Amino acid sequence: MNEKTAKYIEQNKDRFMQELFEFLKIPSVSANAKYKDDVLRCANWLAGHLEKMGFKSQVIKTKGHPIVLSEAKGKSNKRLTIYGHYDVQPVDPVTQWKSPPFEPEIRDGFIYARGATDDKGQLFAHVKAIESLIKSEGGLGCNISFLVEGEEECGGNSLEEFIIKEKNRLATDAIIISDTSMYDEKTPAITYGLRGIAAFEIKVRTAASDLHSGVFGGAVGNAAAVLAYIISQTIGMDGRINVPGLYDDIRPLKDWEKKNLARLSFDEKKLAAETGIKKVFGESAYPILQRMWMRPTLEFNGIFGGYMEMGMKTIIPSTAGAKISIRLVPDQNPHKVVDCVIRHIKSVCPDFADVEIVGNISAAEPVIFDVEEPAIKTGRDALREGFGAEPVFIRSGGSIPIVNTFWKELGKPVVLMGFGLDSDGAHSINEKFNVNNFFNGIRTSAHLISNC
Image 1 (cartoon, rainbow, N blue to C red):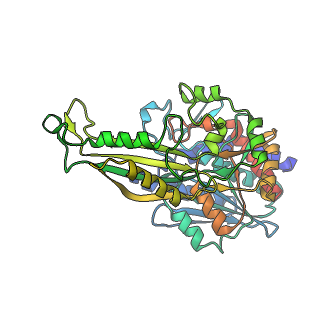
Image 2 (cartoon, rainbow, N blue to C red):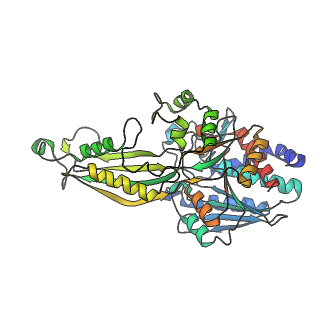
Image 3 (cartoon, helix red, strand yellow):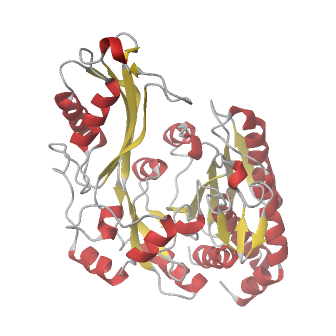
């Protein structure tokens, strides 16, 4: 990035912020059907904004929410694809927001709004970086494609289907994604690995219907108690998953990864303060970063059964259920792991009860990239330039299923370079994005694209 580009960014900071606010004001909540028109409006807004910059944009209809595909030619034949999502999470409970979620405002150096960090703010940093390059340098050094979806937050698979169908058309040299995080407030990071995920729901049944606890108590099994027993036999209070075979295929860490974890020197007290926990939890034999990034976990995301309204109802619940998610690490296969968990649950279920899987099983494989990939090295250099600090390599405990699709179908490296922070409150109330990180992200992206 040359001085002209840096000057253009500085001169247009106020306008960039105003335009980001316009983007954030659109309530593009993909999971709620009542926002369907707003999601479409957001897609059209983004496509139109990119067209004004000289891109050729399409708003591609799908069975769900539309995909925005925008392309601009550069001086070389090389192509970079920038992925992001314009849809956002629901805002409930809205009463706990300090300011309305779709009326962005700046407080104490942070932009507060739904989508500020996940992912509108991070995506828009790339948009403004490219505008800055076009205006200050008269064009782009390489071809640029924006591929932006509206279903990331609702679990849709329209983009996956589109990539598989159009992979020849979407051929690229690298995919750039800013939907992850920095290591901390001062340290930018390249995320080189993501955990996979498998999720499903179980239902326990002990009788045809709920029964009077006085009349039938002592003769009929309680489905809620059975579910509690299954949970107790599946995950221990030491963090260990008590499922035979689940830990069989975990890829050992390389020596440089172990040294990298030690260098990062994670602050457990800070984690406790940020999350409001009494103390950290998990497998004490492993460092906490390894537990969060490089070990599988099993969570009961929700449990339900029996009478759950106000007051008492003295029944024996006939059914109870739970939603379960499993985070996976290389080289675990989601379907094999799910089979292990289901087999275990059925084996510990008492013979007076039945347990079944409800609905479909969703799954995405873990992914890990070679940090020596030239595109990843270029991304690391760009972060150093944009943030003025030495970047580190991290993994993420989260999952971005579309990354696997890009990797498998397009066969090119994915550079995960986040500009946000874990403490930004993505998916939570009072979501925010650091103003400085927004502009540092613009500088980072400009440097990256200048060197593509």
